[in-house]
Length: 195
Image (cartoon, rainbow, N blue to C red; front, side, top):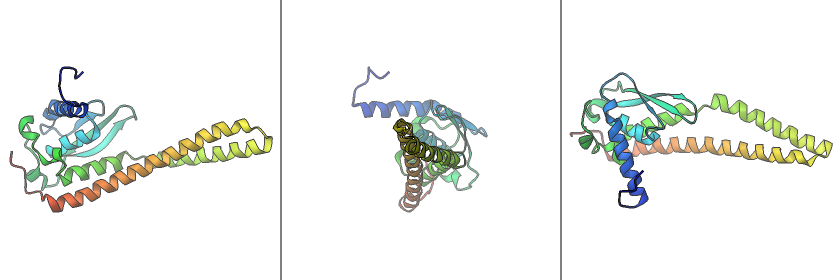
């Protein structure tokens, strides 16, 4: 994969990410919809690339293992000051603030993606059923004196705790990105990007 390159592992991974972004940058040529799978670019890389070219997150298609994130042109008129024109070569585009953590719009787009991919409508009922199942197994184990039922009850309890932790981490990441967007607007006002 990267055996002929020098540098630390993180430096090589960073260079690989830059090459992958350069590979997918031509997709943002003004078309009305761009789809990027999580197997092509990491979510934060896709958001940075879309933001740099004036696109915003619209929706996610697919399942957990292979998701396609759909980006559409941002209708906000202020985007034209910050976005690159379609067809800008990667050598120029890589200097855009979105790739260096200085774009409030990229942080807001990332927060919107996290919010859009959260499926609480599906997850909360499943968690309630799992919790009722755990309670039922514990009651059954106590009543029938079959302590072997505590093994699956323990597993499902740990699963429930992991799901709650994942949901909390998503909310925390979204709040951090929204706070970062507010901070970045003050630090780096979007006066435009001149390539």
